[in-house]
Length: 112
Length: 112
Image 1 (cartoon, rainbow over the protein chains, first blue to last red):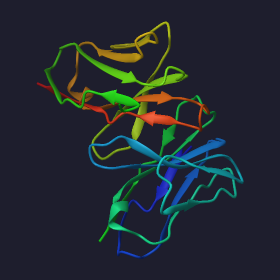
Image 2: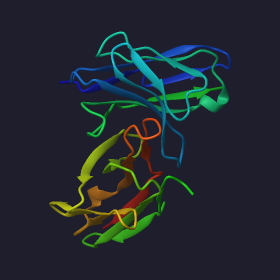
Image 3: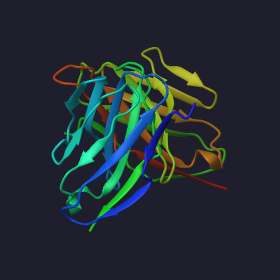
Image 4: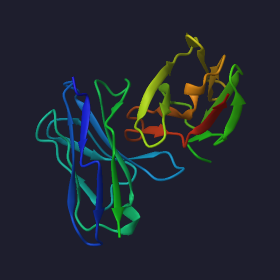
């Protein structure tokens, strides 16, 4: 079991560029999440999904989009990168809403 | 008032010390509670869930006080390897929209 995997580990983007952060889980979890973590701050929920084909906004969705075509994959899309999106992005999954979330190793994104 | 508040620390303690962290939450309808541990530049990992009756896992004890809306984590006989940031997590389920709130974390340094 690989758990939750994320790619890339690190990326530098120029302002206005686009990219997709990949997230895959092999635990057959229905629930998946994307968070961002800024230095010294708690994790902020960007988007979440309760199953394939169903996604919803979290606390800080502006500037991001997601899709959930399969149970395993939950990519996060940045369309027009801005310096404010410089952060560490974590993907997580859980079997149920009230249960433990398992996190991927994170993607460090720098927008210059 | 923040939805979940933690003392950011840092707590600097010698090996063998007992250290306690508190976390307060604002939503009285919160449904589940967790402590996660996050090592520097790593993803958060579940340390323990927090139950109403309190629970213990080796040197770690978690307590929930619903009346006062706080949870606590007690670490006994601190080890160097306990040095990390401890995140308080409160899950509000679907009340008013899905919300899992992460505290900003409390940093712990255990010294030899």
